[in-house]
Length: 479
Image (cartoon, rainbow, N blue to C red):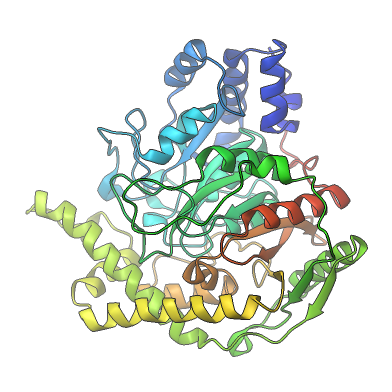
C-alpha cells in the first residue's frame, strides 16, 4: 500500500510512472484516494456520489493506457454524462439523475488512463463563484481555511486536488469556474479555447458558448498530458476546434525563441477595487516573468462596457435555467420548482421564462463583440497578465444564493471581473498559483493567450512553475 502522505505529494504522471514500473498497483492507488477522501470529507464536503465499489472494480480490471495508466479520478457534478455515475448538477431538482451514455469527454478521460469513481461538488447549476449548494447538506470548504470557500463552480474539484485526494480532476468553466477555485485552493487551472475540448454528444454548447470543460491539477505537466488526451474536434460539434500540436506535454520544455511581451492589467473596469493581496500576487508574477527574461508592460484596459456585459451574462444564464428547469417540469406537470431550487436560481427560472428573445440575441451579440475586441487587443502582445480574482477567497456565506438572481450575479461580477470576459472571447486562460497572503491563503494570477494558444500558455506556465514551484505545498490537514 502506498504511503498516504507520499500519495498526496505526487502528481499524476509520477503515479503513472510508478504503475508502469510495477511499484504500485491501480488498486493500491484507488484505496489511497478512497481512504484520504473518507478522512477529509467530513471537513471539506467536496465529494458527492462517491462509489467505492465502482472505483475498486475499475482498478481491479484496469489495463494501463494513456499518459496516466490507471489512476483515481473525479468528474465534476456538472452534468457531464456518465453511465456509471449519477449526479445532480448541485440541485435537489436533479438529485440522483443518471445517463444511458457517456459523454465524449467522459470516454476520453477513460482513454487517458483516468478511473472515474465519483463526482465533486458544485453550486446549483454551476452558477456561482462559491460552492454552497443545499443538495449536499452544507457548504464545501477550502482546505486551506475551513471558514472560506474553495471557489466555484468547480469548488469540490479544486478542494479535492489541493487536499491530495486525486492529483487531477475534471472541471468546467462558464464564467471562471476552473480558474476561480484554482486560485482559491492554490492549484493550476486551465480554461481551454472554445471548441478545443468536446461538449457532446448530448449538448452542442453551454451558455451561448461561454462554457468549456478541462481539468484542475497540481502540476502544469499533468494538465498538458490530460489535454493531449481530451483535446480535439468532435464530429458534428457547432464550433471548430483551434489547431493543436501533436503533444502539449512534449512542448513544455521548449524555450521561446524570444522574450514574451506581456500586457499587465492593474486596474479593473468601472473602478472595481482590487485587493492589495491580489496586486501583490501580480507584482510577484511580474518579477518572476522578468527574471525569466520576459517583458511585462503595464497596459490600458481594452474598451469593454463591463456592466452591460454582466447584464448579458445574467440574461443568458437565466434563459438557460428556464430551459433546464422547464424540461424537467414538462415530465412532472404537478411539480413546484420553488421547493427544489435555491432562491436565486428560482428567480432566474422566473426571469428566463419571460426573457424576450431580443434580449437573448443582444446578449450573444455582446459576447461576440468582446471576442473581437480581446483578440484584436492581444494581437499587440503575446499574453495578458491579470489578477485571477479581485480579493482573497470569500468567507462562507459572503455571497449567498438567498439573494435575487440579478443582484447575486452582479456581486459575483465584482469578484470575478477578469474571468468571464475570456469565456466570451473564447480564448485560453490559466490560473497560476503563485502567491500566498499573510494568512497563508492562496492568491492566483491569470495568464491569457490568443485563441488556440494553449501550447504557449502551458509553456509559459511551466517556466513560472520551474522558477517558483508550488506543487509541494499541501494544506495542513492532519491525515
